[in-house]
Length: 334
Image (cartoon, rainbow, N blue to C red; front, side):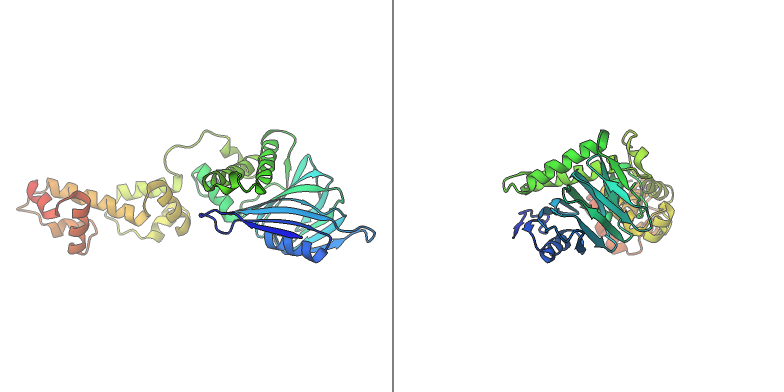
């Protein structure tokens, strides 16, 4: 029997809690497919009967669950399309992904899966009960960028195992356990959008601290101050040559990141798009020149064109909205 509940989160209308207890392979496969991935499930011992007990919740870019099959089973997946961690509480999980050798997940060592590579759980032991955490790749990369304040390669690779006996791995497993415990509480933290958002961020941060990856050492350093390096490169370039006819693509190339990354992170850190920032800098430069100019020897149009404003009417309108006076008034007041 399956029980389904919607999380009343205005910022995340897709939040779903699904609880399933079943002896039917098709129903178990459907439940896992809905919350995690499409799969094939095989009983390894025909003398055993499935006794699946799944409790799963989707929390924005994460899906968290506590799962037990009650029989020795094999599960076969294609590429997962997400990062995934299995943390056994009892029993063991024998698995492989892509061309890698078989790995063993136990209560002391979690299995960590990449978004790509055909995945097989060769033996989910009868007594195995585990926590499962699925993370959308873009969300994890964006979170890592926010922590390091730098661009991250979209092909982030996590180490295939995680130590759960001490340090960040043990702390993260406790956070996962807390999240699972809250899933069925209709008055719990996950039903409160502000708390749920903080729990999601904590789960992402905890995973990045607990798993080994190329950026792991960076996270142990003091938090960087100021702009991310690609953003700073753009800010410095604009400040040095605001009269240059930059395009968004040129600025992204200068920063060494994609246009989309630059726009998202620039807006988050600076408060505007790169091109809006460029226009603001040019406006300030134009105002400074107008204030210092001789009104008998300089015209507003000359200054506007020099700083990249080709439409005088729009320039005057935006200038007045920003500074509370027309550019001609600034010129005369100088």
